[in-house]
Amino acid sequence: MSDVVAPSGPPGRLTIDLGALADNWRKLARLAAPGRCAAVVKADAYGIGLAEAAPALWEGGARVFFVAHLGEGVAARRRLPEAQIYVLNGLEAGADPADYVRHRLAPVIGAEDDLERWSAFGAREGETSPCALHLDTGMNRLGFESLARLRAAMETHGSASGADLLMSHFVSSEFPDDPINAAQIARFDAARAAFPSLPASLANSSGMFLGQRPIHDLARPGYALYGGNPTPGGANPMRPVVTLTVAIQQTRWIEAGMTCGYNAQWTARRRTRLATLLAGYADGLPRGAGATDLKPGAEVAVAGRRCPLVGRVSMDLTIVDVTDLPEDAARPGERVEFFGSSVDLDDFATRTGTIGYQVLTTLGPRYERRYLPPPASQ
Image 1 (tube, rainbow, N blue to C red):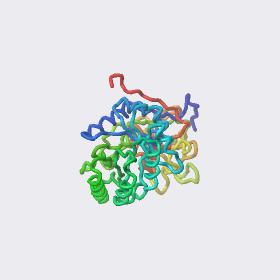
Image 2: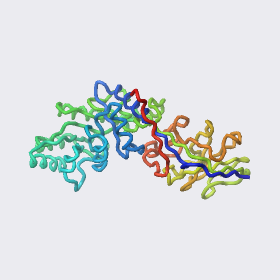
Image 3: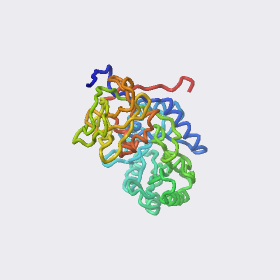
């Protein structure tokens, strides 16, 4: 037999604790001292909503923010009229430098041509606008390819660049013993010596927790602000910010040897009770989150107990094995936590074969979003 019910309200709900977000920033700011602590709010504040997150971080004390694209910078400026905002992807190809200046955005410049274009605009307009200089120390993604090329570019174009920050980005700071961390720190230290008047920024979330403390003048945490663990393998020092719950639509018993989900990837080894949840990969859930006959999957919290997802995640539905719960503990209409206070975000992501960054930034538009404001005393 099966039980069916139509739950009231949207079946998927995101509860976003803006007080925890602000607390996480304050904790990281204390760690960064005597340096400053920025807040990275790219990708719609890692999926939780820039319009809500940016003001909460400002009220929490953040004054420097980083976004990825020019358009994100414009959106952030609307919410943060007094903040210092850097655009990580730099002076975008085809973009007019005037667009950055108009919105008081500082591009993170990492190529000779872009520095020339930015400086030429400043000289032509008779004003110097801020920018950051990005030295690539190992990522091979963006940034000046060597310190020699950065120095040469600054000798030619630096007088009108308005550069006010020197930065780079870690490749593997979440793994403290990776030797590339020490190599990047050494390369960046050489750059700091070459440009002693520029404030320096290297540490991302995990970089702030490295034993070498490469925080310098400005730390740039992102993922940790939103509850992600900056010290994988150890206890998470951050408060959870995002809780995802999804309603049960239907429960049913199946017999040993029966399968569930597309392509019959999971087979019941005993008489099993399944609960079908009203969210799937169209809502940002990883398609491989469920266990198959060949691999384990993620676990979710049902009535406070961990239960495994089984079978392939569908576009709009996910299945969880609730056999070990009392029948009245997993009823249609009840909510199941995918991650939050009971299930760690990184644990959920790892068991699905992805990372928490991707889980957060692909949260779908069909969820109801409930924002918990910071306490009035903060």
